[in-house]
Amino acid sequence: MLSYISSLIALSPELESEIKRISKEITVPKNHILTKTGERSHNLFFVESGTLRGYYFQEEKEITNWFAQEGEFATCFYAFIGGHPSFESIQAIEQTVLTVISFEALKTLYRNFPETERIGRVITEAYYMKLEERLLNIRFKTAKERYHNLIESRPALMQSASLGQIAAYLGITQETLSRIRAEL
Amino acid sequence: MLSYISSLIALSPELESEIKRISKEITVPKNHILTKTGERSHNLFFVESGTLRGYYFQEEKEITNWFAQEGEFATCFYAFIGGHPSFESIQAIEQTVLTVISFEALKTLYRNFPETERIGRVITEAYYMKLEERLLNIRFKTAKERYHNLIESRPALMQSASLGQIAAYLGITQETLSRIRAEL
DNA sequence: GAAGAATTTTGACAATAGTCAAAAAAGGAT
DNA sequence: ATCCTTTTTTGACTATTGTCAAAATTCTTC
Image (cartoon, rainbow over the protein chains, first blue to last red):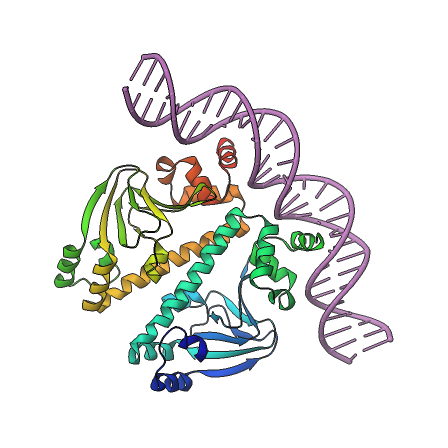
């Protein structure tokens, strides 16, 4: 995480040691749940290796909303920007190494090192742009195109995520995805 | 705009007069273009009455990306969060009364009245949640459901926006929308 | 108010994606 | 290795949406 952050802002030795102090690295096994729907205490995660997914329930069914892989930040974004309770759960879909910072610690960091506010902005921006891109994709591309896009942009996902998770993410049924896959 | 802002943060007399000083109300006619793709100087708009649309070109075709109506903020959001050049254009689709604040003035406002940062956060949040909702809609609802949703949530849009604009916004073709409409 | 432009509707057809049900394959635990 | 569970694939059929072309309607402008 530090090397990623240092690509965003200048990292003074004091700031670096402060970030080290408030963050901790953890390793979670496959299927481990990091955040549950409705939870009020929030963390910002940075994926060092492995994969996380964000999901929630809709009409009894689990809907996978996003994936985060190596080098990406992940959090319940709605809670991140608004301080609301999380409406989605976050789960590791394979063994994952994470750096964790609590929202409280992050706020204190913003106060003591104002230049770190940029981190928050960059996360917001990245989240928003990804969402925008997905919306365009789904509005104007066929399921097949979206699937091939996903393979290109996140090849590693194909190993770790299940068909059902990928299908929900792409907004299609499992069966359709299975057929698209068989075609090649 | 002031009455909307006062619902978000306490509005001291000084802050109120400062906002009045840096913002100006303008009236633009139908089809007037407020922001062009690629522009570097940006404004935040607040719609007092009327309707704006954000759009851009993709493969020669104009794609309507969003609508903003009475009581909503509108801007090229990507530029708003990241300070990038605008990738979309903003146009009034009917006679529209707007309050305008430039990004520069807004930054100065943030500095002088830190409580106004909340405004930026609320705008970000609203934008993000709307986008998220749209993505869910389009992932799991049929064109018909999405159209009826839109009628419910923005009845006034049906008068001011053209069929093609609404169709692009919903991610369907004009013909399909026309047929959905005819069914009732 | 007529001519021309733009927008909307309709038709016929094709392609895409969904549904429900069952079979096949893969993964885990004992 | 075998049984059990979960995931993935396949089949048959249906529903939804897109495409291309033309007709009808509405909106502008002179």
